[in-house]
Image (cartoon, rainbow, N blue to C red; front, side):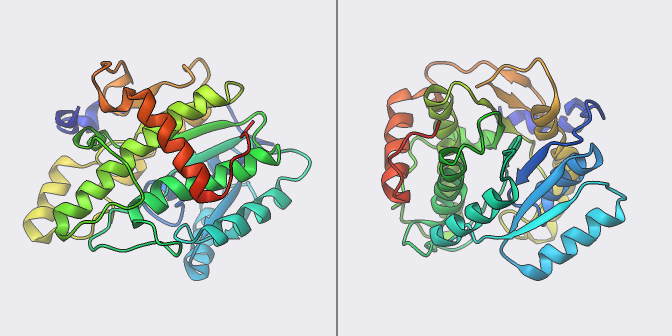
Length: 300
């Protein structure tokens, strides 16, 4: 799958402008830049109303201005939330629930992610790639679902085909150096696949789609030097194109719930030997996230 990044620009589909999303409410994490910004813009242009968690108020204000400059008719609600802190996630979820009161959230796009350049931990002491990319989204989704806000939702979980380099996902992974950060990121992307698979099994009423958006030229992983930046320009796609497959999975009818959609390869059929298909590991990770988030109640 990693080889699919070559030539991905020509193979990445463009999301149709229809159906319209007027009257629909969407929550997108990580919308202040990169793919998340383009996902939010795409949803707004189709008429969706947006809830956008933001850690930095200034970046949140700039995001709202950019969406308004696009002429999007949708309303945009900024919700304070720091995915590195579960208490902040819980508070942000409560704010989102107030906005969604009486109607629920129609689209949940779990986009935010970090590729750490140095070892760090979340406020609760978990390795940061696990804490942000896996656990924070788990806690957010569970709180929304427990309140009944996701009863009719379509959930889109962003991963990365680089997950194939990992075989485990835990909150206590210790590492050093840039390759360690890459390994932490890979492990978290495998964790995204495992949690999504368990979500499908445990909450069959939800529509769940797992998405590889492409190898995208964002700030994820930090700057790579002049040569590395040149390689990024040659191989990677821009965020606007990287947002297309997530938008397809958020908006288009006739998709297979629980399926893994790759920007260049389409609907993926994974071998049973693929680490993403380890059902026991997926169930174990779910239980770990329940314990760490303090949530052992059913999600739907």
